[in-house]
Length: 186
Image 1: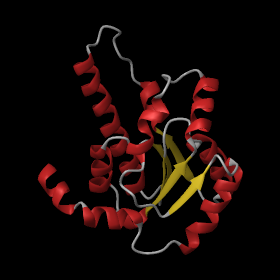
Image 2: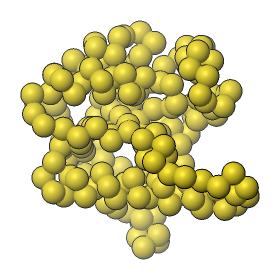
Image 3: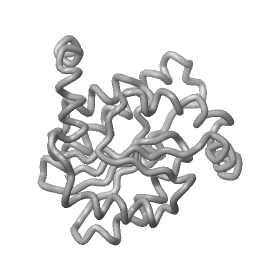
Image 4: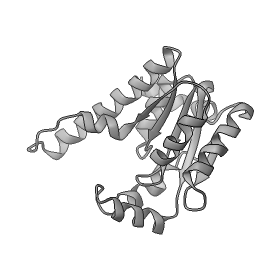
């Protein structure tokens, strides 16, 4: 199973994952995309076009690491930002859609901005720029609002949802809706 937490920067994905992992009752790997970016070295003099290529390769490698762990029979909690349409398409081609629980992690903009400022490790306005794009695909199996509920409450909601998740899953619906677009990409 892949529990796929999607939300903007500072929306609370990592906090939810921290609360979720101990209560799932099974072995899970936690793969936050920030960890993949932190593992990469990037020369300071890299131009914007080169940096874009490096970042895309990092995201693609991240997706394949998640898919590889899941293909090996492992459960995975993913912390992700679907702010570019190609990222979702890439995941749809790699992951078994019926094994993915897509969780929308939402948070009101004023709270996102407060968290971003408090963190100090994100460019100002990053969450605001991502907000509309991250949830543009429109389908989730379950959603959490970290402005209204604590990470522990969100984690319990997700855990309690897992045994009764509906079919088709959000990933199944998304893959079906985007099958033509995915065929053009391959």
